[in-house]
Image: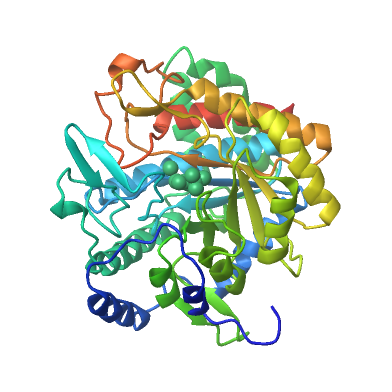
Length: 448
Ligand code: PEP
Ligand code: CO
């Protein structure tokens, strides 16, 4: 940054893509003032801890698991749903920790993932053409025109739901739910539950042996604090800039600005314009950042994004999340890996194998094939092996519920079954079994 100090409001001078057209600016201002007076959801020190953990990933000494809903909703907000989502992520993390042989940094798309960028400002439902659903932070998904009008009071509701969710996440991850032996037991149940699960018997047995080895060495598996608690961080797409601005606070310790709506914020494929408002906003806050990278992104563009978002070359500051599609990644990713390596930016590279593999099924529902998701992850690993960089992590859309939204995988969901339990408010998510199945496969890739 040159000369004049950055301010959380200055994004307003730049073009901001994907912002709702709020019906009443005065009401919006009142709401944003109220939000600015509410307590922060996270603390700057926590965000710094996450940056330090991600620095380990950047150096190839840890692996990132970032996962959760495509869109959290006001409707699906229960302790059980949060617990089940967390449980799947913890189960995956143990499998990945064993596979990678390094710590797994756990970041949820949770406690704030309420806003969605859209490819089209309208959508057709039957004969109706409606304003697009933009996430429950903005409007409602019901198929009628009134529901789609943006309502700023939803920003306050999103803040409160994020606060309750985060409270529960903290309780679960620090209060015993994350117990290593317990989570391992859930994985053993998964393995024993079917023919496909038994494919992973060997890894599960090895983890079991490792635990017994630790106990035999005198490590108290019951008493040892680090085996009962995990660090779990929150993240979301920093899409609605008024909301993010209102939660941005100056850290009293360092004098730096932090967006205290989440530990990590990312900028999406549709909002990452170099001169746009979103990049300007993220450049000013000191949280660790993510930036989605689609298949058409050029090496120059990626390096320019690194310069804007990580000018000081701070390890762990920037995670580049490629989302290219299984068919494109092996050609599109290596030149970007080379360019960033040459530029000297110490980024984390993570693979989002979801957003480049979405298509409409015969019945018109958005879906993704488990095999395409896996193929993109494999392409990601191959690209990194070729260039000599570290495949730092995965970024996934999943739920703990037994939904039928993605095809194939564990339980082999077929097109004709999609309607059975299709509850996502936006993109199709992996269900619990598909997620754990994927974790075992990524663990195999990490060990190869
Ligand atoms: C998302 O992560 O839900 C999303 C919309 O991603 P992208 O910006 O990569 O399309
Ligand atoms: Co999505």
